[in-house]
Length: 599
Image (cartoon, rainbow, N blue to C red; front, side, top):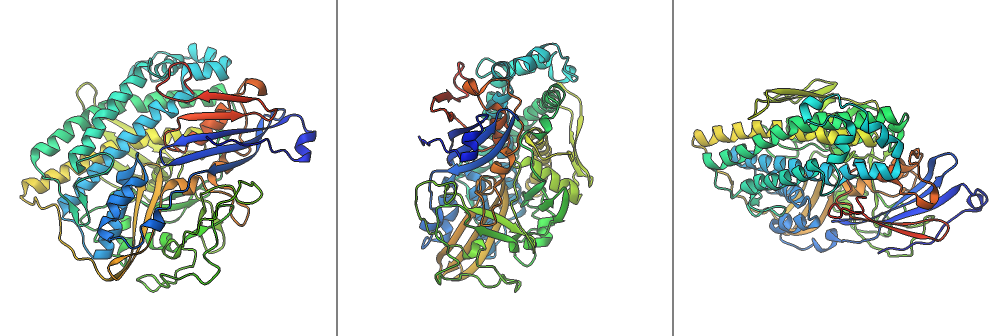
């Protein structure tokens, strides 16, 4: 457990309406997240926020000298939730380094595994973790007036999801006792089974390798996957309208709620799910096969697509130290691993290929160093942009929609929206949903996009099953391609972890790993203020967030702040410990397994 002392400036000490509060740790599988905020209770808004991570991991250090063929087995252990995303990204980087591409069937199997992971993880977070922030008991404790209105507000799509009022939806999300909460737990079980059918073990795949997979592909295998997928599709036909009703209600019941967790639209998506007909994993063709990904890469600034070229995205990556506990490798004559990419483009000293991890522990100081996360940024030629992933789905859908490149039997990107068709299932007819680019990048829209992306992945999985079965029926059952490890190589893997952008940069010398840097979404979303004073996305989204909670400072829960932070899906929040500025410590347990304290 991390503790902190009250920190007030002289101006704040004179302003008795400003209270400093800390939620630390908001614990996660991959680390510890702390939120430190100054709240103006008179103005009902957050004045300032700092995001901290108090755990050092060091994967980039102990990867050096390893056999590169072990990289995916090691890096999958970075996370106990999305470890397969790391394994997949590492395999992509190795494929590029070894000059190998899987047989088509092998790639379809990998896509089916990743689709199952998206469906599993987004479901369990949306309904069993972040959903608790919107459940009846949470709203009763923080906004009783809103609950009273919810109990008398008819749900517009009651006929599709089965709940007559918004209050009924909120009750269904109560931990353990809510029927929708319990149903989602069952869904998480069979979506994990779907993953295991494709890659052997969740979340550390046992049949995933550079060059393909070791999965034995049969018609029965894909049929077993498909039967579970159709159950999920039936489920999603209820989930999408349910969340639309719930989230739209918050906009109506609390005018101005669109500003909770709002920040400038600065989104990054590295793309995911390769098309084996085009993807050869070569750097020189990376832009071409990136455009054929089933989730289109892109950098979006102020709602506009800046680039969807993976080479440009790679060249713009910068790792700034900011207010983090590290020494600057740009000074002191540290080795430069890569001066030019395979196309001859110059590589910056602060690019992941050239990064050195030089830990420098210190006492937390918000005016100095205060976190183990650095400040990843994307350089557009002028500014170092603090991109966020929006928790993953909102950036993926936004990028895919604007590019307008995805077009399958079940999913079409229109240039301003994404149209998703779910076919007839056991009890429900064919349904078409359309996610349209929202007006804001805020807490509600990040959460809404997560639901639509679940439907998107279900529709894409249908496409992948069709393709895989076609390969098997044609007798093309090979799933792996042999390869040799070169003495020298540089490579990169790009994909989307559940929570957003994921890249693995690899340098091989004398057949061993010389440098290796994985960058998952958390270092982006949870980054600290950089050398230019730009706050990270968590910090930025919480700062200036309005406070709608009805409780006074003495019993303040911080629900609006927590909704802002959790909308980024910061990986299984399970404990909140809050310290108020007057010295009183309030401890609130957040566990989906505890019926007494659902927050």
